[in-house]
Image (cartoon, rainbow, N blue to C red; front, top):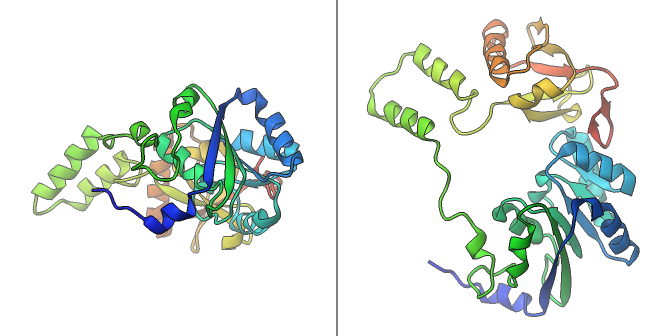
Length: 282
């Protein structure tokens, strides 16, 4: 079913986009050139390390999922006046500002389209410039209509026509719905097997200050813990030695054991000096 939005269509009558493919090595130079010409530039790369390095070189506002809440809030407060913003896909949600230029890795079409929505966001007379890089970048050269998917020349043919199905998870959920009772142990084992979540990776709270105040923390997936210098795990009633594993599943087991010992999921404290304010974990 197609739902037409005539009011939105009218806003976009004078809005257009120019698409170019570049090499990743050109990103910094293109961002500088566009900013020097007075345009507001958004760069999106799905790699935190690359985002931080590029953001520092460009003197840009940086946004990614491993910023503490206070750093994220501070960064979002600078967006209105920023000439260049560099971020991961974390910038796709909750950022209500408009840019003139987007430079992005050619990821899944759903993500790219959402990023394009940050360029000429409010319609009107506006020509947005889109630079894409990566192995699938050329696929976007044919797109002429970026905001109205039901029009000819839109990105609709690039969208996935069906969701990817995890057959093992589907089987598990089907079995659960077919029985009247599952023992707590069976549920625990299934929960453990699928990373403490039946729908996504389990999440934990990581803090950069011994106060453990929420604004000094960020939420991350258990899979990323092996890349962070954790020194202690703290709950209200106990402290635990930090996990020292490389396998994400070992972290899952550790968290479940920690909950059993402490009665709650502990917060993890990073090593002092391992977090750079405004940029994230070193």
